Image (cartoon, rainbow, N blue to C red; front, top):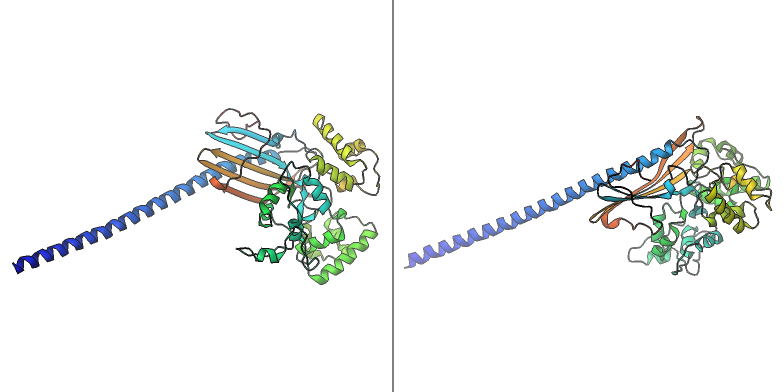
Length: 408
């Protein structure tokens, strides 16, 4: 009897051991299966992203090719590359939305005067008003202004957040950085459609304070800043005009440093009256010395809808006499767009991809009728990170499976 019990115990123990081993093996099998599923899903997701990215890049390069082939001396909303600013069509069961913008006609947030920016945002239809104080506190150097504005915030505010960080106290590098501000999302929603951080200011219209801000961004030290600011103010009194980089040598800028500074400035205006908003036209007209700038801006809008401007001389004749004749129209306006923003959505019910890029084109000084091209920014997003297509006039949807060089 004892021997039988021993055999039963041993058999039971063996069975428990087998069950335990099988259970462990089952857990391992489930883990390996789950990991395989996760890896498969990750690979599938990566494959889908790469495919979507390739398709959207193809759409972009087809649109960008139109800019590269453009030989016109002036740009307007009737240009093929602009496509009336908004395109929508279907391709391989995906909805394609493309927004093209003249980025160079927007106000540069980093150089905006507070009053000018405030006036510009009044054009935005919104019932949810938000203070712009955090924007200027972010831009301000704390050494020059130690106290925050009434509704603004300095580093102390941001250091007290759950994830602390410092205020930049300098230029915005991208508009997305606006979201880091106090009330950042509201400020971003308000400003992102109407301002830029990529447009280069014209050195001939800069104040000495804005010139110093550029020098800081270029990496100049305090002693250099003091000397260069003093020289800049002297040249302002002498009405010195800068036409090219080498002209900056009168300020004491060393030849080897010209390129560093030249990446941040230009020598002409950038507001294209054929594209710019009425508020931006009004702002530039006022700075260019024209009275009744609001009325003139409305007349420009009406005129360009009938026939866009083809030459600056035509614009100048259209505007008539200005109050301040010391100002030059070419310091504020141009008819050549140098910065173009593309936003492209590729949408389907469970699959979305987004590309946003700013491209620069500059006239090649060595070859007439040729452009130099440069990518200024490039950002992509997938699925839940894809921003909503803005509410605006939607172009008619054209036939499915249309090739990318055919949208109209």
